[in-house]
Length: 317
Length: 249
Image 1 (cartoon, chains in turn orange, cyan):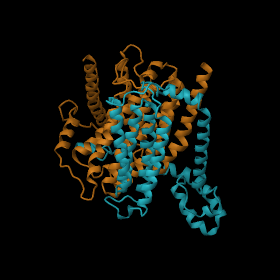
Image 2: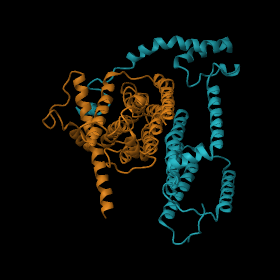
Image 3: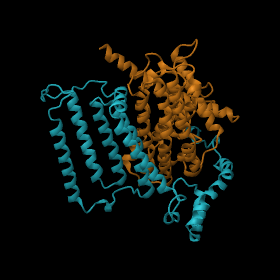
């Protein structure tokens, strides 16, 4: 009985975190982006600095009409947002927040995370194809091409950490972490974060959803709650990707003075801020520049990091 | 490895789950080859691979299961979908998806299945091993690959390397033979490079193979900053791409 209760409590906490953190990041994006552009952002909803803006948005999304284009493939069109969103919820189960604070500790947790997150991109491809809209198909294709090229540096950079820690379990990796891993795994960390940004299709890697040329790509035809689910998937993706970078490269709950879970949250929010910052600062990469960055820039760097990890590992062994 | 033959009835929970996953895998595989909608076939393939991964999980091969999802669902199917959408992906049924060799295909499929089932039953009918969690964990799998099976592993990686080099040779126009040089540039060529290649193709393959890299090298320093600013204004407060801010007003 107590085991069942334990599992239930963990799952409820994960769902709450899954629902709350993306909203916090979304609000942070509203406000941070506004202040970087010398505006105020939402100020009225909820009274205090527009804190309830996203809740109001959510209420509005629910009330909107759910339009499915006549030529669309209805079933695929309908399940695509779920395919995009659910993987991020599933991934959250294995991410450790503090010592003992995780849903499950999988032996191959790192591979689980990378595998499940790859499934999420299928949602964008399905949405793009099923919308029966040429811009959406273009967006879906760009999303597929982007995933194929950025999956490789992502996996290579992550395996460098796994090699350093000698385990694939996320909890195990954080437990093994030492402060000098920061400079040691720095290249891998940058590669992982950049490839993660690309996998989330966040600016400057937002060619698949480029609103000024292909009008949000796969999401062109979506309205109401389904569109909101895609948005939630994007922000949940930011949270998951920041949390993974924290766990793999920034030492998770390690840190002086403050308790472990607080450190994890601080690092996750700091990385989420960087994601927003990068969005405001950099122009969008063109499709060929995007592919070039992956194959000519990130893959060799990730291989270099793997070599470095191996050499240091052998010297210190 | 082998242990006593257990009773087959009543089935354990693992066996029931395994059989159900097998049924899902078989059913979705049949749908892959019988559906009249091209993209649906690729998506049923996802279900099939997922059920296979589930089967690995039940057999405690945890690592193999996640690698199956990572490689097949995350990469192969995405690549397949990309290929389909690049060429032809109509919504709805396509009448020309039927092969004329239906009977032959069924026969070959049944024969293959018969051979596989016979081999497995003959070879492993009396071999039982208890399912212990942790047998298929990454550590034990890794040590057995790199200790007992390192030679097949190396042979496989040489095979993959050969395939990789072959793909590069096929896709590069500037290192191929004369017949290929007049064709379209490979996917790695810059988009701008295709215009001179097509225009010069009358001038002979040698000229093309020389001109392509030169054009690329000339273009790149100039294009990068240009397109950086010309890539479209982004993160305008009202038309920001994230939609929350766009729809927030």
